[in-house]
Image 1 (cartoon, rainbow, N blue to C red):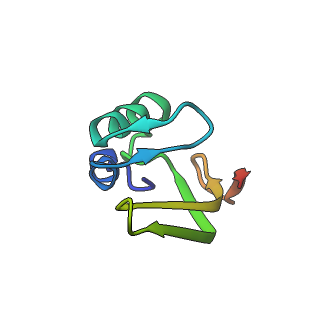
Image 2 (cartoon, rainbow, N blue to C red):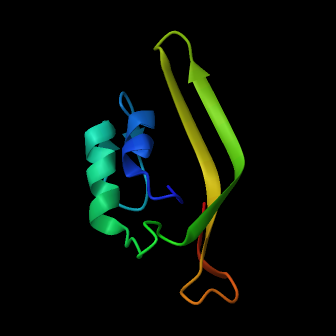
Length: 92
């Protein structure tokens, strides 16, 4: 994500669902498209962000063959010229 490689992020969700602040996004292609449509990339090809994910809780349902995870995320961003990173979003 922070490197601007949205296809690689999509690959992680090839058989999954990304649930964030908007409607659920199903499948890798849809996740990649959502990121390309929503995230600004700068001249260096990155969004100039750093995501810090904490308090990760994973639930595995072996009978159903599913896994779900929830976490907190803080996003830091830096505009050019980058002097100091600023917390842009904190969510749980």
